[in-house]
Amino acid sequence: MPPAPIADGSTPAPRLMPVLFIGVFMAALDTAVIAPAIPVLRQSFDLDNRAAGLLTIVFVLASLASTALLANLGDRHGRRPVFLGSVALFALGSLVVAASPSYSLLLVGRAIQGMGGGGIIPTASAVIGDALPPHQRGRALGLIGAVYGMAFVLGPPLAALAIVVASWHWIFLANLPIAALVMVMGRRALPVQRRAGPLPPLDWPGVLLLFLLLCALVLGINQVTAASTWLLAAVPPLLLALVAAERRAAQPMVPLALFGRRQLALTYLLTAGAGFGMGGVIFLAALAHHAHGVDRSHGGFVLLPLVLCSMFGSMAAGRLINRLGPRSIILAGFAMLALGYGGVAILQLGLWGWLVATLPLGLGIGIVVGGALRGIAIDEAPPAQRGAAQGLVNICTSIGTLLAAAAIGALADFAGGQAAGLGLAYAMVALVMLAMLITTLALRKPAALADEAARAAS
Image (cartoon, rainbow, N blue to C red; front, side, top):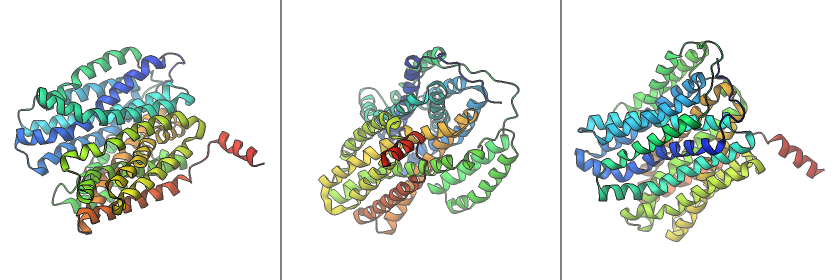
């Protein structure tokens, strides 16, 4: 049974939103600071490239595996305990990482961090859907996207400062006071939801099958082991087994009915496309180095305009979503992404042309990861399944990001690597964004905007 609805006025937005923003900022900040920390961690634990890469892969896998479970628990027991529990898990993982005497324990800490991070963002989005009226949701979700952008701006310099002034341990120890603040504020501000009647049993077959499916997909895409081909071959049968199990479950881990709603099915496809657009950023610094001679140590600086535009795009999209509707916002986002990726793929434009092309690219990323797609998921999903709907947004985004990294790397290597190979790969990304732009046209126009357009035409 779904939790009882939140009473109107039970949680004022001025008290609620800082809790959600600080929690999301903490989770996003960890994603931004791990890159500057990896060279130091490699030296401290004597890691090779493959072992260092596992620090990110373990975090992503744990995050994906926990997202659906924690979202389901939020739908069953209310968002408040799940959000606070996710923050506590993230803090525990940060402590384990900072105190790790060995590489194995370091990976355990990253996994615990990922489990907590997997519950923070979808639960925060579901809280917004529960607690705020529709006309305020777009702006709030857009600000969450801007918080992500802010974390990526502040994260690397803060991590570098912590390493210089103290040690790498403080990159992760800094999460502890932030988590404590969120939990103290959250106990007062987060709404309390009441269950209405007994709950069906937890969908343990769905939990297990989804975990195995995501493991096979993530490890196969990242080619972590020599058996990557076999792992990818296991994805279709695991997917079929998951569908069969979810059809029998009383309260499925992945509600298949959500995919039966045309708007939601399109939203999840577009969310994977948005993740693909985000994942394309991974190789931009390498392209700037190979094609335009940018020093490797300055790669982060040339991406700064992109990150700033991403923050602006998220905030602007959040403010305009009620006026223009999510469909128009998403169209603009994918148009910007197609333009930006098409521009960086033209190597003859030179470094200044490359920098100019990153501006619409940043705007597009900020728009598509802002509030529009999450807003559709909130509006279209039944209130009792908002957490699951938001969890699927996170899963689809992450899968799209992983696919982008794998596709760009493979195509660039196939085309000889270096500048020419990366240029071809980014031309492919631009075509994918163009396909997403065309797919967005299938989204339904808001009724009010459609009526207004009809009146204007007559």
